[in-house]
Image 1 (spheres, one colour):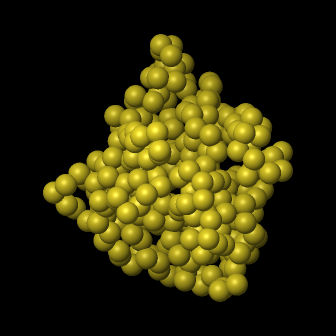
Image 2 (cartoon, rainbow, N blue to C red):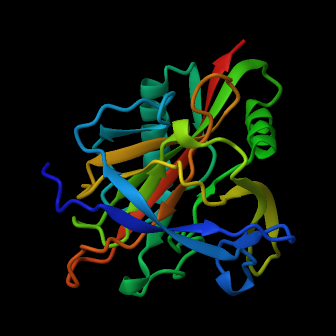
Length: 268
């Protein structure tokens, strides 16, 4: 598919370093304590460029889902979870893969649906879904006592709205993540039944970051990217963020996307 208009640079919302540990909420963003540090950064279109999950930390794959209505959350979970587990197993070479969350649908603000369902806002600051500690905790919990020599967490992201996407996904090449830009933060899932949280990372600015994206995604494509890996010497995590495409036409269909999260295991 041709790339629609080269972008030399975009605005990446980093997090400023503050004395207080940041907290960000799935739904009520008025409670966020993340202080945005917006920076202009180069962006690299990656269509036709080979990448690896263990090098850059992300890949684009052709993947047609059998799901016809992703808005039906229960049906989507029943059908899409096995599809995603099979996909991640195929591209990672793992022995087993399990989905560890239901499908998450997100909407660009321009469409008026952001916030209409749980955790449905686009992620507007650079982050990594889980920290090292959370990655180990989630992997050990899902393994239910079975020993493993490696566990890796993946996010599978798909645009459901037609191209061009007004709010695409930017991916930070894992080779350019040094580690000292990662700030421990609390990801809080707020609901009428009460709040619960786990530890993730927000990301401070580093001029050496290499940001990448895939323009004009279709529903029959998926970005697979890594959010934690227990293996050393490979891409272990990858910051990502939603950004406003400065060249998106004003009449572009507001972005609708869906993501799935899965844990892959290599057994001992």
